[in-house]
Amino acid sequence: MTLCRGRAVNKNATPAPVGPAIVLVQPQLGENIGAAARAMANFGLLDLRLVAPRDGWPNEAARASAALAVKVVDEATVYDTLGAAIADLHFVAATTARSRFLAKPVLAPDGAALQMFEREAAGSRCGILFGKERTGLENSDVSVADVIVTAPVDPGFASLNLAQSVLLFAYEWRKLANPHSLGRQLPDAPQGAGPRFKASRPAERHELLGLFEHLERELDHCGFLFPPEKRDTMVNNIRTMFARMEPTEQEVRTLRGIIKNLRRGPHPSSQNS
Image 1: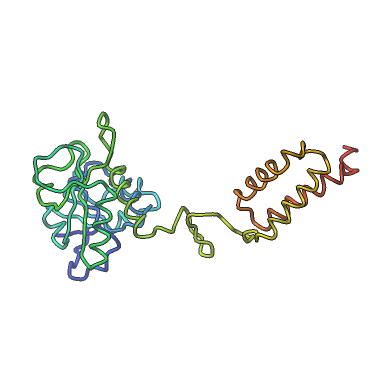
Image 2: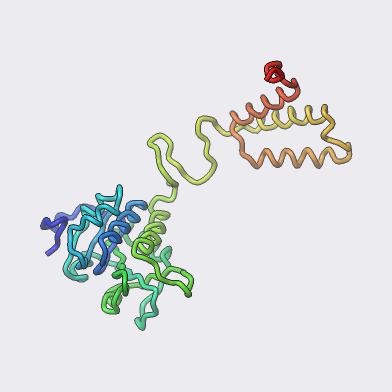
């Protein structure tokens, strides 16, 4: 029978899934289950399935270590057998760091995530298996999977704990499912890769050129751009340095204010301090 926090689940009324199922086969410690759930939630995966957890279920240690991902733990489904846990899936991957004498394709986490992303986009349901902490998956577990997933770890220390393994895959999935989000997202300011322009817009080119001309006048005045035969090279280097900053219009105005006040000299109040 399938259980969810001790309640019977109607498998015909399963809500639409969000990403692949994370299937933990015979996990041992509740703390590790909770940490795996936290790694899932970090990257937007919610479907946690447990096959015969050693210490039973529900497990308060799992809830405690899940932190703010306790919802993933509370909504996890528990199965007596692996076959029951993956019965509704169309494509299954099995994680292992050991060589297996099984004729199956071997993928890195990013390759597995891509295959699942494409399959789920086409309407298939996917899942990835993780074995118990001490020994990993059995050959019989791996045999029911379509592919093997192995991370490119150091061969001299290839062992990953359960949460680390889940996080590696979940991270690769997130990069495909929501590639534009980075870090915390505020409702009015989604964070993505690239320059951060918050309260101020990027400087327009005429504003940047105005800064260059202002600065160069003052550098000529103080004799910095000397000797004359090196002036063009020095100016080009200075302009390149500021252009590389991709300043905002507020930053350009601040820089021009600094230049103006340096020319003006010390403020009377500063001489009294």
